[in-house]
Length: 304
Picture 1 (cartoon, rainbow, N blue to C red):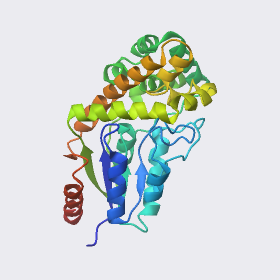
Picture 2 (cartoon, one colour):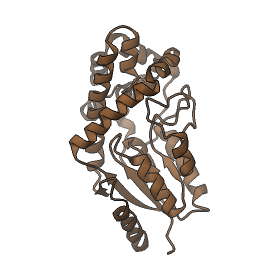
Picture 3 (cartoon, rainbow, N blue to C red):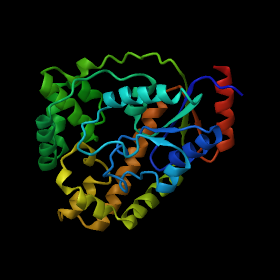
Picture 4 (cartoon, rainbow, N blue to C red):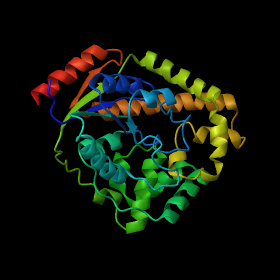
């Protein structure tokens, strides 16, 4: 079989098994995996991001895992540019590549393109992160509502990273963040097949709960302690890290931190599914349906 240049997207909620499936598909087609997980880029964040193990990284070539330092200002726009350059290079030796991850914006950047939004000054980002850490999410929500009511009406208001990103552009440019978002889809010079993963919700939630418990067993608290000096960075204002910082600050017990991470991760998984379900280009499978997925990819690639 001679496949056309085709990018296989494997997306879905956290803890559903994207990494394991991507490796099996990569091995079947003798190809490589590009990660679209917005936190696994960072070398310093491993346990709390459920980064692929050493054995998994050896099982198939991975890219954009441990590729950046936590202090790097690595945006969605940067990922689009670097990701497309990498894809072009890898297509010189492969007909098929895999893009795997649960960060919807980063997947969209590769498949559809992402509007080029100005980078904010570091001092503005640091100030916003400090305000969020000291006063909570309601304060930055209200500020965004004042500066960009359109983006406020669209953004996930429970996600401080997205709120801060919008605010830092508003404050850096004097223009609403929404004014830079055209939503224009860019054509790619390769084919795209989108695989969405889903399963029974109770089963998924049990997988999430188990993963969180394993993170603490693996040393999540120690990992977060080592990142304390970077705690105001956006990457650490996320599920699995902010709750442990609260524990280390004495605001909650470790047991409460565990339960909050479980709850917040379950909510995050629900939001991920909502995001990907909006894209009608996805075909949905359970992660255990390896043969069906491989057959689907093969048939689709031949038809394109």
